[in-house]
Length: 413
Image (cartoon, rainbow, N blue to C red; front, side):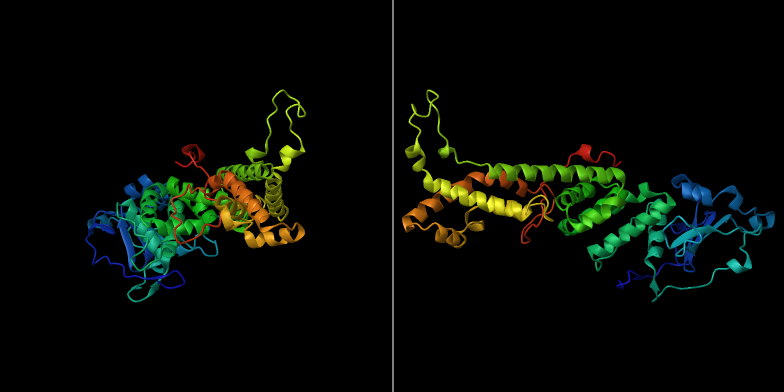
């Protein structure tokens, strides 16, 4: 495949094709001309059954009034549709598709006007625009042909671009229901390769999945788009999304942000259980809760002060739900605990301001380790992976913990 998205392709000519199967049917009354070597003899009843676009193109006024002489000669083609350039939108102004179909009025003899004669343009060895493949695939799908998004040499990117173009052509021809499942199956067969691509550009796949009406791909893309909501790519595409898609994405992202925010507030207000004192009769002096009682925990309070200062510094630096990663790196370090943050080298500056013996440092660090261990659950739930992508050798950079249920995309039917 060429870098420009074109393909070397050889299409069977009418003489090579079996005249009782696609693309040439002996009793077909419609000739569709994509190129000189891509001509199809199909049935108007079949095309109009599946497509409102074909019902308009193959209207009675566009049908040839074949005379007896033409019928006697065995001419049964009553309609002809030619592929024409629409790159300037001069044929279909409201349609962003470079090639569209246009009716050619045939005469009573079943022939086209002289200026509509078909030139021979064999494709052997030539570079052919991919949109011709798209028309070939869509017309074939109407007749039960298997849709191929590419061959073994094509990358997932090639297949995705082909799928997007196939959808545009299918949308124009109003036969999305014919191609959606085959395209979805072909993409899902790519497995982890597909899921890894969705992680990189979830916003693109979210829009694509909505058009494809693929719940599986939509769910996957929604999980990652919600976790990457603050990223510029997601923000740029948000106004272009269908209002229902944009609404559910914003809802999921807002819920995730609020959850991260509350967890950070809980971290800031955390106290080790050992620091608390229980009142017996209800009076601190009678229950002997004085300075001696609290002084036993002084090193623990110093460790808690270190911990809270680290949390506060991260919040002040906006490594929170406002950050591009929505606080993912912050939560990842808290969930790991141990040397992931406030490791021994990080404490030297503290010890310079508050000197103590090596034994005192050990006690402070033990308290700090206990605090880190206790708060892990507050962050670890954000590191859960609700998507199909398997993070193995690649370190995640965004949240993928958003729960998505059927009710979140029931509008995709």
